[in-house]
Length: 134
Image 1 (tube, rainbow, N blue to C red):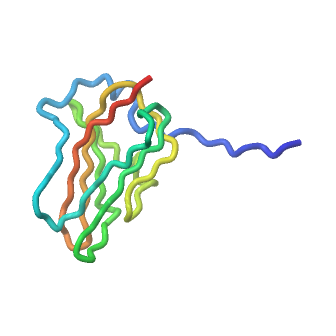
Image 2 (cartoon, rainbow, N blue to C red):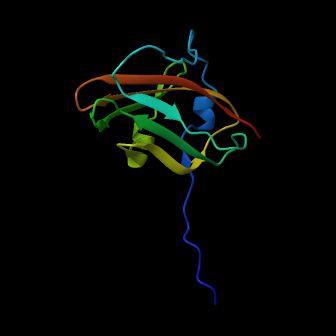
Image 3 (cartoon, one colour):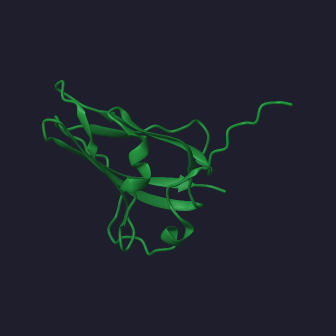
């Protein structure tokens, strides 16, 4: 008899109910440019379009030898009211980024915000749109 594959459930990052909340007024994706020593957050995209479940990855880049403080990471779904997703991603946060191999998301456009600090107290923020197709 073949060995059973380990059972695991996808991490539900955003629920259907949360996706139905009205959008936050004025929420737009940002690409912060300029000189800063604060940490940078980068979305690591897979080569194919975003389908659910997906492999969700963010990369954290620090400067000047500073280390990222994983406890400072805050993850927010920009809706009205905003939805704090931090507790859902915390088990997957590392000093180098967030890596959730099997993430469940509803179809649609989702505006997300990530905030973090390095151990020197410098902050980094990224607001990005995640489009999930059927």
